[in-house]
Image 1 (tube, rainbow, N blue to C red):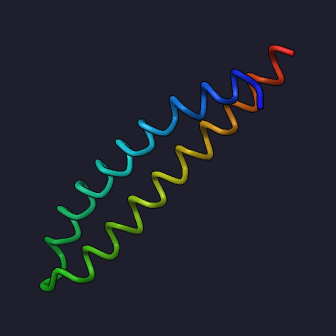
Image 2: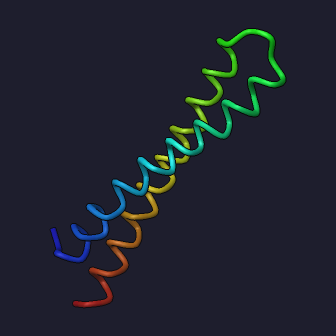
Length: 72
């Protein structure tokens, strides 16, 4: 693996975790207003957080690949 790819991936992990946490907190607060029980908002918030985490991990991998190809 190239150094730029590894750096982009290592930097992307903490930001992806932070994004997932914030998306979970925001979406849970909003979903809990619309549903009387706590099960459905919790499940939907975890799905949203997983999507945000996955999106930012994939984005950091793409940036790492782009950087490694740019600096060859």
